[in-house]
Image (cartoon, rainbow, N blue to C red; front, side, top):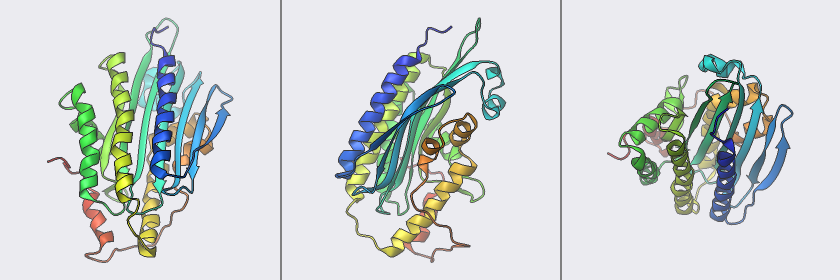
Length: 302
C-alpha cells in the first residue's frame, strides 16, 4: 500500500469547493448555492452545490465527489491497461457556470486526483484538471486577463508548463465535427505525477485558486452590460455547442457514467436552456460572426 494518502487531497478539495462557492456568491450578489449530499452504493459519495436563477448566474454547479470501486470501466482500462485488476479511488471538484448575461462567458474548472492500488505493487496515481473559458461576445482584454492568470500560476512550476497545458487545453476542448474550439481555452492537464506528489499537489492548488482569480473580475466587469433578445438567442444557440462537446467528447462525463456515478451530478454541467438551429449563419460583419475569429488556437499573450 502507498504512503500517499488521499485524505489530504479530499480535505483540500472540500475547502476549494467552499472557497469557489463563496467567491461566486459574492460575485452574483443575491444567489446562494443549495447543497445536495449523496452516497454512491459502490463506494463514496459527494456534495453537489447548485445556484439557480441568481442575479448574474442563471445556473451554476460546483461539485465535490469521492468515489471508489474494485473494477474500472472499459473507458479507463482502454486508456491505461495497467489499471486492470486494481481497486481505485477518485476525488475531485468540477464546476460549470452559465451566466445570464451573454457578455459574461461560461466557465468551467476541474481538479481531480486518482489512485489505483493492488496488493504487493506500487500504486498508480495522478492529478488532472484545468480551467477554460467559453465566451459568446468575446472581449480580447478579458481573454488576455484569463490567460495571464493561467500563465502566472504556471510559472513557478517551469517555463514550459503554461505553453504545454494551454496547448493541451486547445486540443482537448476541440469540436472535431464543427472544426472549432469550444471557447478560448486556458489550461488542461492529466496523468500528472512526474514532479512527485507534493509538487503536483501544489500545482493543483494553484490552478484551483487561479480559477477564482481569473473569472470573478470578468463577471464584475461585464455583469451590467446591456443586452437584448438577439444576444440572448445567440447565447442559447452557442450553448448548444457546449452540450455537444460534453456529451460527445468529454472523458470525464463518459467515465462518470460508465463507473456508476451519480447522473444528476455528472450532468450538472448542462445549461438550463439551449437551442439548435439548422444551418445557422451569422450575418457577415456582425458581432455574432466575430466569435468565429476567436474559436481557433491563438497565443493570447503575444
